[in-house]
Image (cartoon, rainbow, N blue to C red; front, side, top):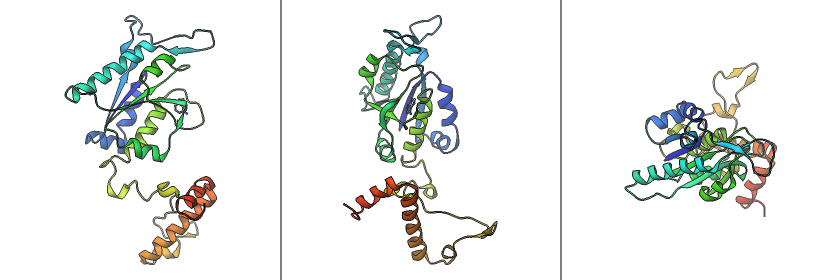
Length: 243
Ligand code: ADE
């Protein structure tokens, strides 16, 4: 998978991509994340300006259409060259609090993409005309407003990358964990057996795998019911336990 991140702050993206599991996946080239600086496409060769006042007045500056569009065209051209002259299918995702809220299912779906382009806004947003021209999906990471799209873009890339084959090792598997099948993960324990007077549940020391599995499932269901009643309701419906 190759992700292009259109941004005014490429160093924010590059720093995160170098680190931990994303860093390992990038080194192995299982995922490739390229931050492309929108400012490099400014028509203002002197000051590299990319923003201006909004028509109709109002506070704040807006990112202009031209540098965003030219940045996207350069990315499209690169993808086309990489694919022997054919532009590959790709989504252009604009990170915005107005978008559809990103979920684990969304991550699974997008992990099937060979190419993704993520557009990060700043200031008061981006000229609507370029959004209409290039964006295929508008995505939010939650109902709160951030100062820019870079952190949301990296949240998405992190969540998506976990479902790209080879990114996680077997022991880090993205299946059977929190949110798989609408259940939260069961509680887990490591050494020592007793810590501050709290003992590890007996059953986990029993060596009886069937019993351990049953206990874990039970705890996962109970946890979901109390911590996330919304998820629990979905779990019941999807497993035919409730209409
Ligand atoms: N940009 C600013 N806030 C955002 C959010 N919640 N999700 C995605 N992009 C954003």
